[in-house]
Length: 311
Image (tube, rainbow, N blue to C red; front, side, top):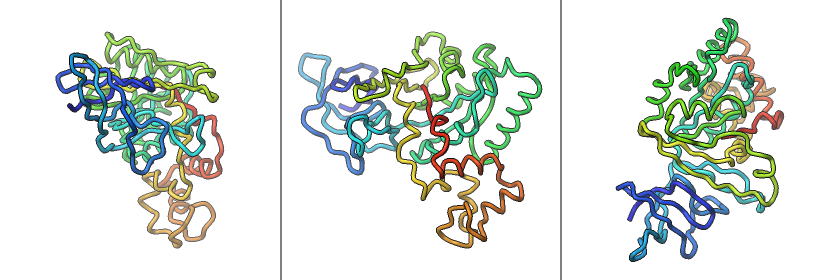
């Protein structure tokens, strides 16, 4: 029988079948996955085949379908292994604010770059539009215009007034979605505005819960009333810290990726080399200077704190 994992508790998995029935499943034996050394072979979002146990609402997982993508973080126990937070995510949404609190472009870009690395479509949503003055509305409009110009879906919403929440619903419909952003940007309020019937705990997780060797991440997917799913996990704070390779970093910036073949040197890092098409585009104003600065900071491993996210 085929189903999708909607909750993981480490040893047991809740799996929903095509009829909407939820089964409590476990693994029997080992399941090997090619290309990824992981501490947990089954993750939320996985499509699995399981064998129901006679006379019970339980089953045994036999096989995992090929994944479209995974979001991982470093395992707290094995430095070379990863912990899969979620699989088959259709849309990663960074929820940002111009103020109350301010979200830096460095934070936004690290999220978008990481989503690119995991091959997950992403969107940038600015919440709390009802709180901004004219200058802040102008700042938000400039950012929305730039990110939209390089291919990202971006717009403003208000969880409080419902402004453009229907637009966000339309974007999410039929998808497995992940929300991430700084604490205080209104992720919980936004999810409740999208589906008032859902009592979803999204917020700050105390340091004791996601640091140190005793860390446990129990991920879960929640069905929203308009035909979308949202992934809820404290572990997402760490996902931008894993597997970001400097050699391929520029490829994660769409406006840089389009110019790389025009550089004089094939292995150009776009930092100091002569004949660099990316640096020329920055000088000409075709690439925003602040985006280029964020690229350099990532290359130099700066601003690690700006990478910490919460779901």
